[in-house]
Image 1 (tube, rainbow, N blue to C red):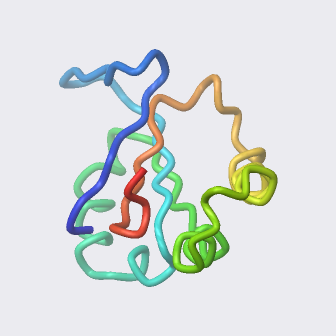
Image 2 (cartoon, one colour):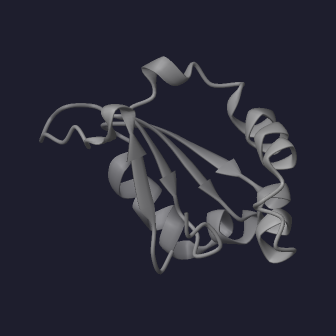
Length: 101
């Protein structure tokens, strides 16, 4: 995870020591299998709820230059994120250099 972006409700990260966070980490399946990610999960999972979300179809969209296809992008995002109760999620971490938006 060389670079990542954080998208938070209201556009402002709610940070605070001792405040448990509910976080979805969107990344390639490979990124989510890396030792570095496992170490980060181990570091934060005891105090936070973290859901790793592999997004292989989103990677394909990026690699094929299809980000301009709004319907395709939205269908794909809904396929990944509709399973979460998003109003209760504090952050979505775009944990892969494919996701530069």
